[in-house]
Length: 151
Image (cartoon, rainbow, N blue to C red; front, side):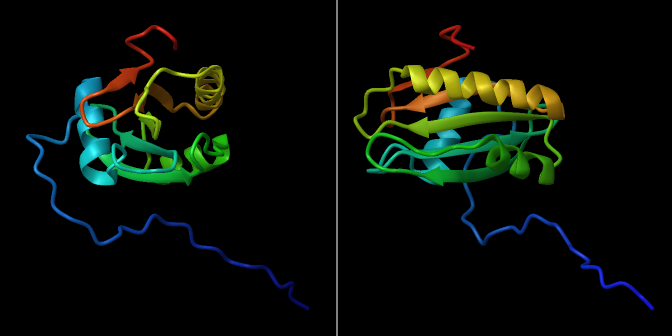
């Protein structure tokens, strides 16, 4: 007598989207990552905190843009599982994290720094590097945690 098992299929599904006018798909600077977060997810205009990520390949070519979590005015719940699930499905070599501060003040909080360090540790286990974490205040105002040497 046979045993019932469940067969699963796991995939990333492309959403219908707009065409964005970027010079190229390479994300080599925090400024370029900031531009992508602003253009694709409008993180400068959101009234709640949104945690997002860019997935990149081994040559820093953009492979995906994901909205991971939407929170409230001052926080967003983020778990490593939710971040790395997307990155693994995209076969990513690296991730650039980003989230907005609706107050338009991009200064990182202690929670922002701790979360990023936890995600870096989780990334080491699955061999996916956290390249940077941007905190976005508005269209021109953002902080790169890597440039500030917080990570």
